View (cartoon, helix red, strand yellow):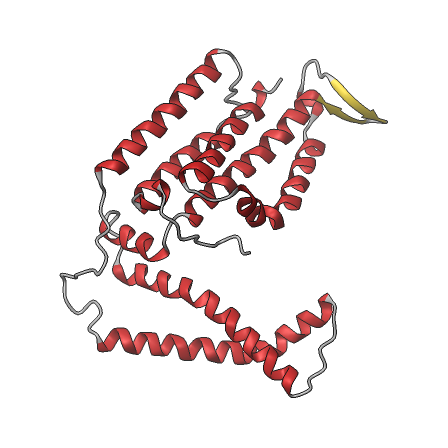
Length: 272
Protein backbone atom coordinates (compact mmCIF):
# COMPACT_ATOMS: atom_id res chain seq x y z
CA UNK A 1 0.00 0.00 0.00
CA UNK A 2 1.37 3.36 -1.00
CA UNK A 3 0.50 6.63 0.68
CA UNK A 4 -0.65 8.38 -2.48
CA UNK A 5 -3.40 5.98 -3.52
CA UNK A 6 -6.81 6.88 -4.88
CA UNK A 7 -9.44 4.44 -3.61
CA UNK A 8 -12.40 4.32 -5.98
CA UNK A 9 -15.72 4.27 -4.07
CA UNK A 10 -19.16 5.87 -4.20
CA UNK A 11 -19.29 8.27 -1.27
CA UNK A 12 -20.06 11.88 -0.38
CA UNK A 13 -16.38 12.83 -0.37
CA UNK A 14 -15.75 11.09 -3.71
CA UNK A 15 -18.58 13.08 -5.31
CA UNK A 16 -17.35 16.45 -4.03
CA UNK A 17 -15.80 18.87 -6.51
CA UNK A 18 -11.99 18.41 -6.18
CA UNK A 19 -11.20 22.15 -6.21
CA UNK A 20 -13.79 22.87 -3.52
CA UNK A 21 -12.43 19.99 -1.45
CA UNK A 22 -8.85 21.22 -1.88
CA UNK A 23 -9.66 24.81 -0.87
CA UNK A 24 -11.61 23.62 2.17
CA UNK A 25 -8.77 21.38 3.34
CA UNK A 26 -6.21 24.14 2.77
CA UNK A 27 -8.32 26.53 4.89
CA UNK A 28 -8.52 23.97 7.71
CA UNK A 29 -4.79 23.25 7.56
CA UNK A 30 -4.03 26.98 7.57
CA UNK A 31 -6.09 27.36 10.75
CA UNK A 32 -4.34 24.43 12.46
CA UNK A 33 -0.96 26.01 11.65
CA UNK A 34 -1.67 28.88 14.07
CA UNK A 35 -3.00 26.71 16.90
CA UNK A 36 -0.52 26.07 19.73
CA UNK A 37 -2.27 23.49 21.87
CA UNK A 38 -2.60 19.72 21.37
CA UNK A 39 -6.30 19.62 22.25
CA UNK A 40 -7.57 21.68 19.32
CA UNK A 41 -5.32 19.90 16.82
CA UNK A 42 -6.56 16.56 18.20
CA UNK A 43 -10.18 17.68 17.68
CA UNK A 44 -9.40 18.72 14.08
CA UNK A 45 -7.64 15.40 13.42
CA UNK A 46 -10.53 13.41 14.93
CA UNK A 47 -13.07 15.25 12.78
CA UNK A 48 -10.95 14.63 9.69
CA UNK A 49 -10.72 10.93 10.57
CA UNK A 50 -14.51 10.76 11.01
CA UNK A 51 -15.00 12.35 7.59
CA UNK A 52 -12.67 9.86 5.90
CA UNK A 53 -14.26 6.80 7.52
CA UNK A 54 -17.93 7.82 7.54
CA UNK A 55 -18.27 10.16 4.54
CA UNK A 56 -15.42 8.69 2.47
CA UNK A 57 -16.13 5.02 3.31
CA UNK A 58 -12.40 4.33 3.79
CA UNK A 59 -11.82 1.61 6.44
CA UNK A 60 -9.73 2.68 9.43
CA UNK A 61 -7.34 -0.24 8.80
CA UNK A 62 -6.69 1.08 5.28
CA UNK A 63 -5.93 4.54 6.66
CA UNK A 64 -3.47 3.13 9.20
CA UNK A 65 -1.83 1.15 6.39
CA UNK A 66 -1.29 4.36 4.45
CA UNK A 67 0.15 6.17 7.47
CA UNK A 68 2.29 3.32 8.83
CA UNK A 69 5.55 4.32 7.05
CA UNK A 70 5.22 7.86 8.44
CA UNK A 71 4.24 7.10 12.05
CA UNK A 72 7.84 6.48 13.22
CA UNK A 73 8.91 9.76 11.61
CA UNK A 74 5.99 11.49 13.32
CA UNK A 75 7.04 10.05 16.69
CA UNK A 76 10.65 11.17 16.13
CA UNK A 77 9.55 14.73 15.30
CA UNK A 78 7.36 14.85 18.43
CA UNK A 79 10.20 13.71 20.72
CA UNK A 80 12.66 16.09 19.05
CA UNK A 81 10.26 19.00 19.56
CA UNK A 82 9.89 18.14 23.26
CA UNK A 83 13.66 17.96 23.75
CA UNK A 84 14.40 21.11 21.70
CA UNK A 85 11.92 23.28 23.62
CA UNK A 86 13.71 26.04 25.55
CA UNK A 87 12.51 25.68 29.15
CA UNK A 88 14.49 28.81 30.06
CA UNK A 89 11.91 30.93 28.23
CA UNK A 90 9.28 30.08 30.86
CA UNK A 91 8.91 32.32 33.89
CA UNK A 92 7.74 29.51 36.18
CA UNK A 93 8.40 26.19 34.44
CA UNK A 94 6.59 23.13 35.74
CA UNK A 95 9.42 20.59 35.53
CA UNK A 96 8.29 17.04 34.77
CA UNK A 97 11.71 15.43 34.22
CA UNK A 98 15.18 16.63 35.23
CA UNK A 99 18.42 14.90 34.21
CA UNK A 100 21.26 17.12 35.39
CA UNK A 101 20.88 20.47 33.60
CA UNK A 102 18.50 18.95 31.08
CA UNK A 103 14.87 19.80 31.89
CA UNK A 104 11.56 18.76 30.39
CA UNK A 105 8.62 20.87 31.50
CA UNK A 106 4.89 20.58 31.06
CA UNK A 107 5.03 23.31 28.40
CA UNK A 108 7.70 21.44 26.43
CA UNK A 109 5.53 18.29 26.39
CA UNK A 110 2.52 20.32 25.25
CA UNK A 111 4.66 21.92 22.54
CA UNK A 112 5.94 18.56 21.28
CA UNK A 113 2.44 17.08 21.26
CA UNK A 114 1.14 20.14 19.43
CA UNK A 115 3.75 19.76 16.65
CA UNK A 116 3.19 16.01 16.41
CA UNK A 117 -0.60 16.23 16.34
CA UNK A 118 -0.42 19.08 13.85
CA UNK A 119 1.56 16.91 11.42
CA UNK A 120 -0.81 14.00 12.16
CA UNK A 121 -3.71 16.31 11.30
CA UNK A 122 -2.04 17.26 8.02
CA UNK A 123 -1.58 13.55 7.21
CA UNK A 124 -5.25 12.78 7.90
CA UNK A 125 -6.48 15.57 5.63
CA UNK A 126 -3.94 14.64 2.95
CA UNK A 127 -5.30 11.09 2.98
CA UNK A 128 -8.84 12.50 2.91
CA UNK A 129 -8.04 14.37 -0.28
CA UNK A 130 -5.82 11.84 -2.07
CA UNK A 131 -7.87 8.72 -1.27
CA UNK A 132 -11.19 10.29 -2.33
CA UNK A 133 -10.13 12.35 -5.36
CA UNK A 134 -9.77 10.95 -8.86
CA UNK A 135 -6.57 12.47 -10.37
CA UNK A 136 -8.20 13.12 -13.74
CA UNK A 137 -11.19 14.88 -12.15
CA UNK A 138 -8.78 16.89 -9.99
CA UNK A 139 -6.81 18.17 -12.97
CA UNK A 140 -9.99 18.96 -14.92
CA UNK A 141 -11.37 20.82 -11.91
CA UNK A 142 -8.18 22.87 -11.63
CA UNK A 143 -8.48 23.76 -15.31
CA UNK A 144 -12.22 24.49 -15.33
CA UNK A 145 -12.78 26.02 -11.87
CA UNK A 146 -9.38 27.47 -10.91
CA UNK A 147 -8.40 28.37 -14.50
CA UNK A 148 -5.12 26.45 -14.53
CA UNK A 149 -3.44 26.34 -17.93
CA UNK A 150 -4.25 23.04 -19.73
CA UNK A 151 -0.55 22.76 -20.63
CA UNK A 152 0.39 22.63 -16.95
CA UNK A 153 -2.63 20.54 -15.97
CA UNK A 154 -2.19 17.80 -18.53
CA UNK A 155 1.57 17.82 -18.00
CA UNK A 156 1.03 17.21 -14.28
CA UNK A 157 -1.51 14.47 -15.02
CA UNK A 158 0.87 12.75 -17.44
CA UNK A 159 3.64 12.87 -14.83
CA UNK A 160 1.30 11.43 -12.20
CA UNK A 161 0.34 8.59 -14.54
CA UNK A 162 4.00 7.84 -15.24
CA UNK A 163 4.79 6.99 -11.59
CA UNK A 164 3.11 3.54 -11.53
CA UNK A 165 4.41 2.86 -15.06
CA UNK A 166 7.98 3.43 -13.89
CA UNK A 167 7.37 1.06 -10.99
CA UNK A 168 6.16 -1.64 -13.38
CA UNK A 169 9.13 -0.95 -15.67
CA UNK A 170 11.51 -1.38 -12.73
CA UNK A 171 9.96 -4.78 -11.93
CA UNK A 172 10.29 -5.86 -15.59
CA UNK A 173 13.99 -4.95 -15.64
CA UNK A 174 14.55 -6.70 -12.30
CA UNK A 175 12.86 -9.89 -13.53
CA UNK A 176 14.83 -9.79 -16.80
CA UNK A 177 18.07 -9.67 -14.79
CA UNK A 178 16.95 -12.61 -12.66
CA UNK A 179 16.08 -14.71 -15.75
CA UNK A 180 19.58 -14.05 -17.11
CA UNK A 181 21.13 -15.31 -13.85
CA UNK A 182 22.22 -11.93 -12.50
CA UNK A 183 23.27 -12.21 -8.85
CA UNK A 184 20.66 -10.64 -6.57
CA UNK A 185 22.05 -10.14 -3.08
CA UNK A 186 19.97 -8.87 -0.18
CA UNK A 187 20.69 -5.72 1.79
CA UNK A 188 20.23 -1.97 1.50
CA UNK A 189 23.62 -1.41 -0.19
CA UNK A 190 22.87 -4.03 -2.83
CA UNK A 191 19.49 -2.44 -3.53
CA UNK A 192 21.21 0.90 -4.06
CA UNK A 193 23.74 -0.66 -6.45
CA UNK A 194 20.92 -2.42 -8.28
CA UNK A 195 19.06 0.88 -8.64
CA UNK A 196 22.20 2.44 -10.19
CA UNK A 197 22.30 -0.37 -12.77
CA UNK A 198 18.62 0.05 -13.57
CA UNK A 199 18.73 3.87 -13.77
CA UNK A 200 19.81 4.10 -17.44
CA UNK A 201 17.17 1.73 -18.88
CA UNK A 202 14.53 3.35 -16.67
CA UNK A 203 15.52 6.80 -17.92
CA UNK A 204 15.51 5.66 -21.55
CA UNK A 205 12.08 4.08 -21.11
CA UNK A 206 10.71 7.24 -19.47
CA UNK A 207 12.02 9.45 -22.32
CA UNK A 208 10.46 7.16 -24.93
CA UNK A 209 7.09 7.22 -23.16
CA UNK A 210 7.24 11.01 -22.83
CA UNK A 211 8.00 11.34 -26.56
CA UNK A 212 5.06 9.11 -27.46
CA UNK A 213 2.70 11.16 -25.29
CA UNK A 214 4.01 14.43 -26.79
CA UNK A 215 3.58 13.13 -30.35
CA UNK A 216 0.08 11.86 -29.57
CA UNK A 217 -0.98 15.21 -28.06
CA UNK A 218 0.54 17.15 -30.95
CA UNK A 219 -1.13 14.93 -33.58
CA UNK A 220 -4.51 15.53 -31.91
CA UNK A 221 -4.05 19.30 -31.98
CA UNK A 222 -3.54 19.88 -28.27
CA UNK A 223 -3.87 23.65 -27.52
CA UNK A 224 -4.33 24.38 -31.23
CA UNK A 225 -7.69 26.05 -30.54
CA UNK A 226 -8.75 28.54 -27.88
CA UNK A 227 -11.95 26.64 -27.04
CA UNK A 228 -11.69 23.12 -25.67
CA UNK A 229 -14.19 20.38 -24.93
CA UNK A 230 -13.87 17.85 -22.10
CA UNK A 231 -15.07 14.29 -21.83
CA UNK A 232 -15.93 14.60 -18.14
CA UNK A 233 -18.27 17.29 -16.87
CA UNK A 234 -16.65 18.54 -13.65
CA UNK A 235 -18.59 21.40 -12.12
CA UNK A 236 -19.55 22.92 -8.75
CA UNK A 237 -22.89 21.55 -7.56
CA UNK A 238 -25.31 22.64 -4.85
CA UNK A 239 -24.27 19.65 -2.76
CA UNK A 240 -20.68 20.98 -2.76
CA UNK A 241 -21.79 24.34 -1.36
CA UNK A 242 -24.00 22.66 1.26
CA UNK A 243 -21.14 20.42 2.38
CA UNK A 244 -18.70 23.34 2.68
CA UNK A 245 -21.19 25.43 4.67
CA UNK A 246 -21.96 22.56 7.05
CA UNK A 247 -18.33 21.58 7.63
CA UNK A 248 -17.15 25.15 8.11
CA UNK A 249 -20.04 25.83 10.52
CA UNK A 250 -19.09 22.78 12.61
CA UNK A 251 -15.41 23.73 12.72
CA UNK A 252 -16.09 27.40 13.51
CA UNK A 253 -18.52 26.41 16.27
CA UNK A 254 -16.03 24.01 17.86
CA UNK A 255 -13.18 26.49 17.50
CA UNK A 256 -15.29 29.22 19.13
CA UNK A 257 -16.20 26.94 22.04
CA UNK A 258 -12.58 25.81 22.53
CA UNK A 259 -11.39 29.43 22.50
CA UNK A 260 -14.19 30.57 24.83
CA UNK A 261 -13.31 27.96 27.45
CA UNK A 262 -9.58 28.71 27.20
CA UNK A 263 -8.63 25.41 25.60
CA UNK A 264 -7.51 26.71 22.20
CA UNK A 265 -4.23 28.65 22.26
CA UNK A 266 -3.09 30.93 19.44
CA UNK A 267 0.51 31.69 20.21
CA UNK A 268 3.87 30.07 20.98
CA UNK A 269 4.00 31.68 24.43
CA UNK A 270 0.44 30.68 25.29
CA UNK A 271 1.47 27.08 26.09
CA UNK A 272 0.87 26.23 29.71
